[in-house]
Image (cartoon, rainbow, N blue to C red; front, side, top):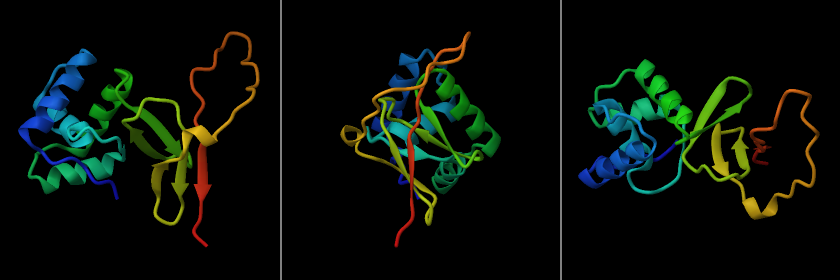
Length: 144
């Protein structure tokens, strides 16, 4: 389970600056979710459900639909990257640098894999009329 930032005035200030840098209006819900995601300066992989639960634990009133919509807005603004596993489970990564991930099948947790250990020598050419915009590398793990 993702450990989120504590809602402090410093975390809210950090979240406010993060939103402003992307040109997003700082609504109460956006500020709360931004503070939980990046308020302590740590990168994390969050799910909408986990972020919703973290807000509820802190007595912050925000609907699950608002969490989903806000995460989409953060992605559209270039603040988060969505990593989809199994075509259905989405994780939202605050680290926007290119890097691979480990997906732990037994706990459904997504963690960073060492970026310096990944070497991609060549990608297939994109079809006519298309361009490669991202390459997501998710390495699935199972504990033995």
